[in-house]
Length: 328
Ligand code: UDP
Image 1: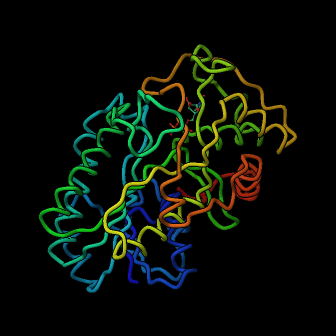
Image 2: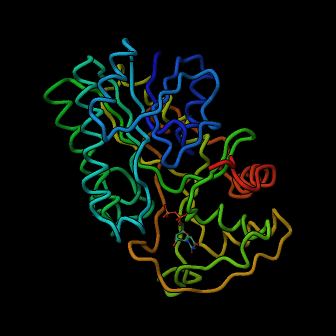
């Protein structure tokens, strides 16, 4: 298939683009390089630099690349904490950018769409692990913005026959030998912990130790980025057969912030000092996914279920790329 990957120069987008290339698909990457890196784009992919906020650029993209079979939409503002400070960057921009993309998709007869959605839809879960029947309570303007887009997809299915999959992923992490996590500023736990192991930071700050969890720190479900990428490909390939779908995606096991730091100490051999700080607004105490539905329907199986292996893959990349892709 010919697949358009928005945000394909970013962390999850570029690794998915590389997996798509490896699976024999033709890939077009569209990215404004706000957080992305040209070096992350697979050389086999066609790279178009542009911004979804610019409707003309999006129109030109589709005009220049006829015959797109499907879209994987990664390009987005993605930070829970930032969205609590700058809500319209999320509630407005994430929605408008997706709308610009969808408008041109329909105009150019593209009817397959995979959305990278989020576990931040589940701020107050009634059951753990969280399955797809859980009620939606967005935990932040970021989560709300993804829910807006899920609703747009729902209406585009009814009105235009779009087939879509919403992949609500939990904590994406881990790297591949060629591509890794490099954000500026970095806010995610695992790369920050590894920066301490590289002596680039004196310590890691734990955001709150007074949550109702066994050690008081937040519990999250960490899923390897390659496993996420594989889920995107399976979902795209199954759309014609199964129709629109929503899947929760995680490993099904929770680790506290302190357990993540402890795992990093084992893998890196570095003491990784930590200090306890205040809670980060917008963080729920526990988020663990049930991925039973995608396992049953698509046969998805994580290749990297162990946190230790995930951490090792991240450590390998960060050691080889101590300044990320560089040249920002
Ligand atoms: N976290 C932390 N210190 C940091 C960064 C993150 O304690 O410097 C915690 C955060 O509160 C959350 C978990 O680590 O409970 C994972 O956060 P991350 O930002 O990596 O992913 P998110 O859960 O926001 O998707």
